[in-house]
Image (cartoon, rainbow, N blue to C red; front, side, top):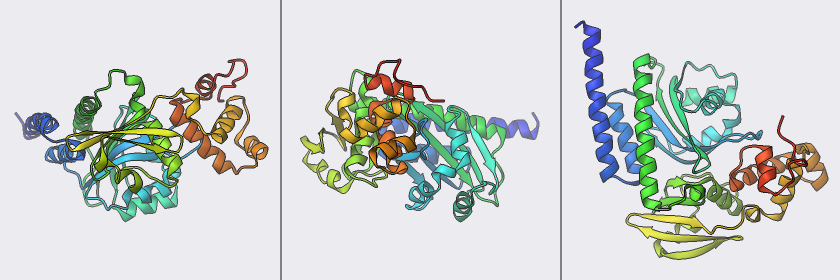
Length: 334
């Protein structure tokens, strides 16, 4: 056996040990500890300088992606907030989110957007390896990104293969954790739930619950529940009201399960959101809706994004169906 073959065999044995450790962590470590410690175990197989992971929303709408639950290794607390400022121009993120299940790699500070390029340089994100997965039960996407600095080597083909296999295991075990915590028979309503630690940090959150929280707390950026909600976690079991929505808090060991009441789909929208959604589903453009309702185009986009998340739809046709429009009235997106 030549030197290269021996190195590959050694790495495969290390990867096997990593998966065994991941299984152990899934049984013994809950919440954000599982993700972080699982990736630290993988770091022994595929070295990296920093990492970022979580849940992210995307849609067919012309709005930037948004992270809702995220964790990090060797990155500053401000990392997600800095990324959001240029998220709409991040071509690498668009490529990753548009190809779920595929490992996407890039090397060099080459983004055409100066803001995104400066962000990558500031955090020495020279080599990037990322994968995303669809989470149909939550209405969001799951992603994991690994980074190396400019002084390190690029991620090789074998490392990409190991990363893909590892993330499939990581995601499956995390989803099992979430399902065991929530213990809800139907997968259709998992977008109405969240799992949080007592300090308010999120382990899981669904798209519709995200939209309700953001509507009541404008500017909320996920990962940690708003302070007004976090303070209520210690009182669980309890029920709190978020605007028109009712939120049930149920204790579960070191976690609290948050769940929305199950109203009819269209009734979850505020009157203004419903009006904007109806006009959009009927074929009006952003500018036309803004002119008709005397709103800014940015506000129209925000209302539409919230409507897509809360109704769990991904296209104009699905939006029209959720609102009860006749298919002959609803106009599909170009």
